[in-house]
Length: 616
Image 1 (cartoon, rainbow, N blue to C red):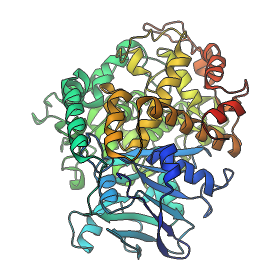
Image 2: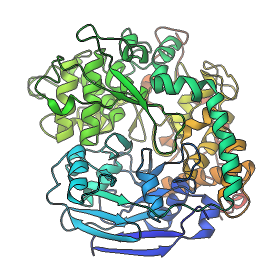
Image 3: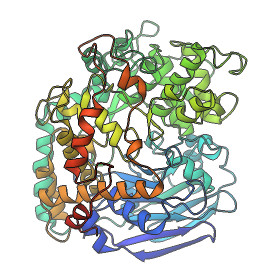
């Protein structure tokens, strides 16, 4: 129970949609969502496959708690081989789409092949069919969402789609559902576009069954109380969202600024949560209008913002006058501190464009920052950019380039490569702040040492959500550790990685773990799912998932040499703040991490480790 026990397999080449039973043995070993779909991908695809070829597969997957009354139980993931990294890609999203998919009766949808012309998948409970998407090809996310609901005369239809960026091969296109929730990293939307798949539209009304309904109601009610009484999940995130971190991380001296040249941004306050809630001088209104929650979420950290209509970016742009998804911390950092731009309205506008055209704002902002440094060095010229001066701090450059990149036009085609390929093209690969080809998020590892190891070892490339040691190093959750020290960080990172892999596979949001541990989550899964589920077993599941992803990447051609950081972070010390004089101490942490993982000094899981995890 809780799993539907069914997979929808869609062969885009042949135009067929077929139901098949879920492998329940794998479900018990890998739980669901991230873990279970990775198992299917690993079994069914060659790890060396070209990510944009028809032979790559794309899997939409729910977890066993998706669609239930468990708080935050609305998540789904997209799993594929990522074009940005050539590594395993798993991108997680909230909103209401995951719930709709589960309530339609499907644990996973596996997409194979490539359609001969643009199509979308329409799912109405157990009925699924591919439809002609020609009228929507070339349309934005917002236009497609509105158009599909109108065409099928169903305002409750839930849509996950790509914008123009995904159609035209921007390497970090994401898949956007519910207008502004996104499976946002690694180019999963680029894979979707390569398959001529414009959208997935779902209506589900079947409901989700659990093993022990009365016990499930009791334990989920108890755990909702834990979230409500926690300072972060009950107060901080609802009031300020993730943007509460902007000033905190800046004061810590770990806010990457101007392509990681600096670790503190003088304009941080101007783009912070506090700024979003402060009335504007122009119209007396605030940028932030309200908070918003995903399906079943009792935290409601999402932001809804409205732009100043007198700002130069939105004059004569009525499509941006309404309220829409507001800035979260990672997007505000990438579009702001990374590029040196402190214009809150310009950042909000750029974020709207990213949602509308399905761009990952982290990679876009970080790539623009790298381009700005190349421009500063004279390696990119004004003629190449179409007359736009790519100077750090230029809001005009930000707002112009995000639109060009969203449409893959002009210099936007160059920015659409991502910073690794862009910097290689212009002869300065060292200026790309990436791991395995994916751009860093908003924490400088010189000021938060555990995040350096987190980035270097992340299976999907640089990522904060695979091991959020900021929780411990800055917020003191579950215990406080010194962000400037490397001692003990290998064990901390491994513990976060394994636990997060289990959470990502459950259908729950990782933000719940500011208040919950696996001891809070295990009873909910145990009441919902067949079998016995303990915190100890969930940690084993998480470790099994992490090793499976590692095996996939090794088979794809990645090695221990890819578990590293850019030279700037290893050689150039922080200039200001508490971390002044420090570099990332990866060399001190990585060997210990490999040992704790049960891997060889070359980063390969040993036979003993695989046998212990029932993987060999």
